[in-house]
Image (tube, rainbow, N blue to C red; front, side, top):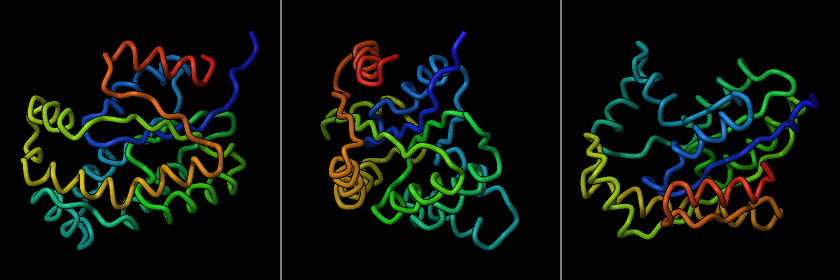
Amino acid sequence: MARRKQLVLLLIGPSGSGKGTQARFLRRALGGAHYCQTGDILRRFIKRDSEAARRAKAIMKRGGLIPGYLAAYVWKGVILKNAKARDSIIFDGSPRSLREAEEMDEVLKFIDFPLPIAMYLTLTAEEVHRRLFKRGRYDDTKKAITSRLRFFRRDVMPVVAYYKKHKRLITINGNQRVSDVWADIKKAIKL
């Protein structure tokens, strides 16, 4: 049996767009690709005994956004430590800024991995609110959700434009049923 092509996939979308769900499907389809979920990595990071961890924890507790350099630091550490030749990687929640997107390209080139393909899961603001309130996590307050949406438009949409400019963007309608989103992803990356 031939080995599957190595892929680096980025799931980009506002909170509640289904990135984590689609990442689970992708991991299964790609035979256990390495999964790098920035939020989970940050939640592990804040359990450390350091000043940076305490400050990050305070920001997350009040529903704020972790600085981009800290998010980049944690995913870079995981990838540089754990990525092995021929692994596929799925990023969920990164990159969150144009600078981080450029750094990701540099890191992947350094370890001789393919440049990433970004999958932008679109979702209306109304649907973001509906899904996150239904999810009911402690940091899913109306104020925090509004702040995340503002951050997404201001900081993450330039990332979407970056990948579009470099012809590495696939746009997927995230307002559909989960199975339809997955069908569109499979078709787009020829799984």
